[in-house]
Length: 222
Image 1 (cartoon, one colour):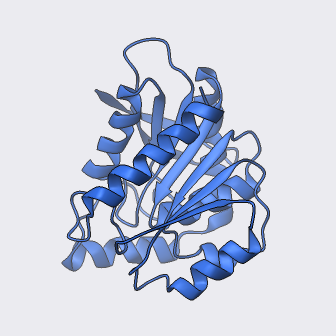
Image 2 (cartoon, rainbow, N blue to C red):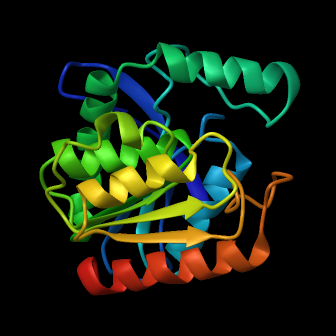
């Protein structure tokens, strides 16, 4: 369903992206932000899922500033490489790539953003720092508590795993206290519960959180 494209950010950096087009006229655009593992098959599958629901979906390769083409699995050396790229990434530069992707998606109408794991943190920061987003759905972003004093510019919702070892519930509660007007959902699951390629996948939590995200997109994107 999708195609590989190139996008150029405001500072001249060119990066890869996966683009999935709907079968008819798009309802709007969805910006799909990767986990710590790059634009891998699961992320492309999620973009395809949003396209099948009627949206133009684009997943930018946000690690391309560190190294082109990083796409790894969830265990062993691949996982370590992904985490290394994540740690080497600069959020200020990432926001430039997000904004360039948003601008391309805006050709389809209003633009929502979602992401998981590292992408959940990117989604939250994008909601706070990037103009022109219609809404944001952030899944278990480990860095969200570090930036929780920032203010979102668009409607936002959080999805957390109750047994997520990387984001203890006291940190979730601190984020909720900082953002009392933001919908925050906690599921009986661990980190990565949305990804059916991971051992931590939790079907009921994945389906319910996806339903809530799609309802948000329907309300604010189209």
